[in-house]
Length: 78
Image 1 (cartoon, rainbow, N blue to C red):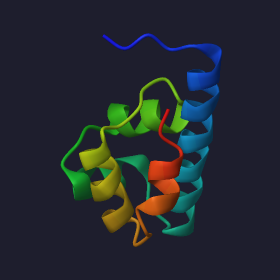
Image 2: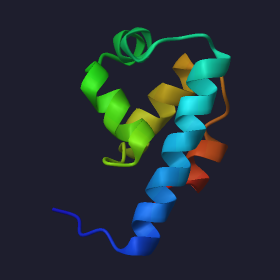
Image 3: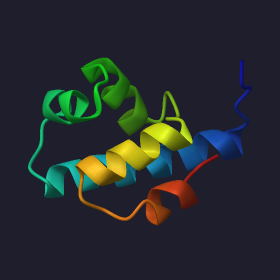
């Protein structure tokens, strides 16, 4: 289990905001995005709120589904 510090939480929130904005730009719902990466809608919600941090593998899948480069997402990793 990973312990989050305030700094980690801040980074998770920033990453979540990047994911949420990219999803909105792609005109996808959380459910649509979840289906594209074979995940649950609840997981997408947790990523976007910063309550959970996706693995690097999942970030790559998100970037691909959102037609974005992985780098901006990976830079947001806590």
